[in-house]
Figure: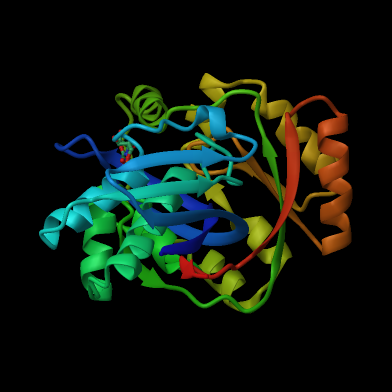
Length: 297
Ligand code: C5P
């Protein structure tokens, strides 16, 4: 028997970052929006825990126990006194190390899939607890839609979205490590008073209205200067996307994927063609939001 779960990628339309905490994490006001780019995680009974991966980025995915999908299966098995004897296969379509929560999506997907395969019937609360242990973005991958993440990003409040937003995501030729980007944020803000992170009411209103122009005027990412400092070529990608008709462009999460908000689906297609042709990114994809969270197929 096997179970397949489909899980979306995310973009952060606001990522407000506070000062480093004693535990090294940063308090965030993180407005997550799930986008319709998906990984599919299939779990099948097996003799022992094993992870495989297919798709365009498969060679960049670790298949050992650092993989969040493997850690999810181990965590659920441990809590329910089972052996984690499953083959986890990830059909990967979310860019790897791209700031789109691809690893988190695989963690949430494997958790939900193992829960269904094993009939553990974990409550939503327990699943969210395990997700938060796995990583700051993993709870959002489970719930999808749109949400404000506070704390280190794991405490979620669902948000209303009043329409469909059309995005283009440009992938880069190499990845960026999230801890390295946060360390660069710390370096750049050394000696500066970092304000408490708060969600922008104008941004939440724009989301609730489904107003792309208003959303474009209010998006922000406090990690963007750090990502650009480590990966200066991204500034050219951002300029190209705007020149091709995007309402705005920003680094997605810790990057290096860049996200462009388009006024309509046709413009999104045009921007997605123009960006790779400009030679400033590896590839570009259109995706729409919001998208549902992890779903058993
Ligand atoms: O929680 P997660 O494992 O996804 O975080 C990866 C890394 O990103 C952390 O080890 C930390 O360096 C950084 N991080 C942070 N503050 C957050 C979330 C992540 O500093 N709120």
